[in-house]
Length: 103
Image 1 (cartoon, rainbow, N blue to C red):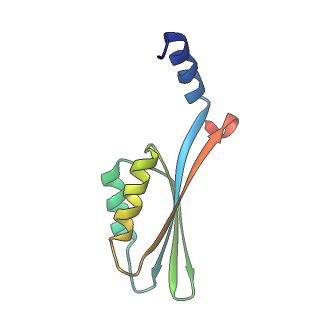
Image 2: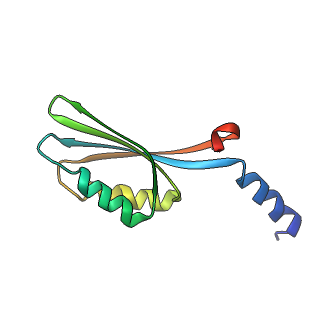
Image 3: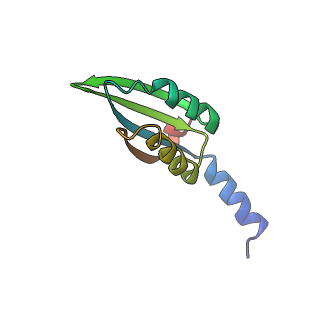
């Protein structure tokens, strides 16, 4: 049973943290997928906080940090990224930021 006081406590606690998800996407240099990644992100309604693309040898590494979606949506987004090409590797980190990092 949840009381009104405990709901208020939970609401106050939620205001003290921020949830982000960082996707690490690796693709071959011949797989130009940045546009596809962008379209997929727009369709998910996720807010992109940071997106860094680096080239390492014959691969592109995309490090994309998003907020505004939950864990389940992040897992679905990871699956969508992985389905864009057979040569893509995707890893997602779920991060909780507390205190001054939450703002």
